[in-house]
Amino acid sequence: MPSALPPGWLPPERFVPTLPHGVACAGLLLTDRSGRLLALRSVRGPDQYVLPGGFLEEGEDLLACARRETVEELGFLPAACAAAEPPLLVLAWSAPEGPWPWRLAAFFDGGVITEAEAARIVLDPVEHDAFALRPAEELIALADPRRGAVLRAAADARRTGRPVYLTLPPSA
Picture (tube, rainbow, N blue to C red):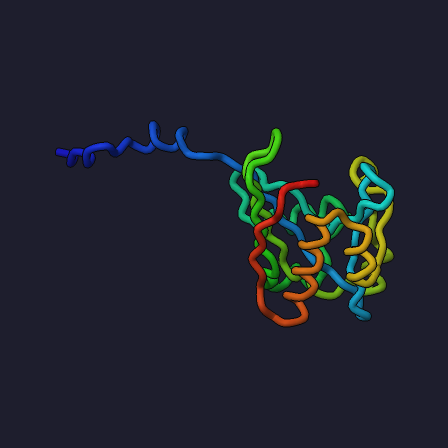
């Protein structure tokens, strides 16, 4: 005979729908041998550069999402992040805002992309129209404050070897 639930407790099928829901995304920080970040220019804005990554799909974990999105956006998975488990650099939280529920973003250290790999990049023109290898500070200066905070944290975490947790401010 199953035990009764404590007073006030709901079975999962009734409790889970009462919880706040959100979305998760993940990406990879890739650099060249000089330490310049690989960034993809979004078709949504000429100076909007982003790291390879995107939204989590059903049944996927954060690292699998980062890898899948990188393959979709570059046309392949660079060798440095294919063979090993890349370390987590940034975990970023955003509170609900406008139409968006809460968001959780994870960025992993994808390692160094070789010149030969950079030459193989084939972008999905629906999302990106160019890529660049640029110093972190240049990309941070071009980014909106939220993306800039993530880029700075990812570059700092890679340099120090210490992951960073960010609570992102509301969009301006």
